[in-house]
Image (cartoon, rainbow, N blue to C red; front, side, top):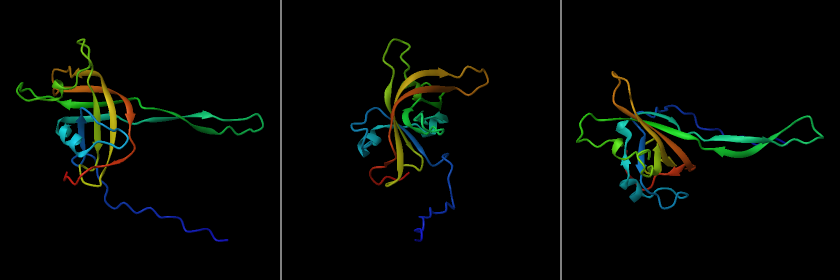
Amino acid sequence: MALPNPTIAPQILKGRTRRGTGHWIWLPAVADFVTGATEEEISAGTDYTKQISALDGFAPSPNTVDFGNAGSLIIPTVPSTTTLGTGTVTFNCSNDPSVSDARSVMNDGLDGTTPTDGYWVDAPNGLVGDGLYKLYAATVQSAALSTGLDDALTLAVVYALSAVSGFLTVPGDESS
């Protein structure tokens, strides 16, 4: 019996870097995390893309457990829990006090107030209809200004991640 022909993945002829194409949008609320943000919720968010100088983390870490038995020398593993960890966003800050930047929103709660909760939309190909994005539920864990005398003024915000979606379709037919 002949094996069926496998599906061939398309060749990627032109890839993209994330710089210049993607969007990182902060949403204060999302009504239904499972189905994703609506067009109205994304429109009500703040697109911080042009203030972000660096991103790190935002990568869930899957775990496995051993599932061996006494009758075998091979110990297989099975999927277990996934650790969401943290994500860090470094924002450029303005020297002009009349310009609003991330410092006015991203509160770590060290002043006795409640830390900022919200959602990050990571749309690597922009906000194009039928494009894909990931949604992260996030709480500000720490927010620290750069301290070097010759450094650009930046704010490094570490987020505790409490949920991450699968790939969701960008709602509507917006252009990037």
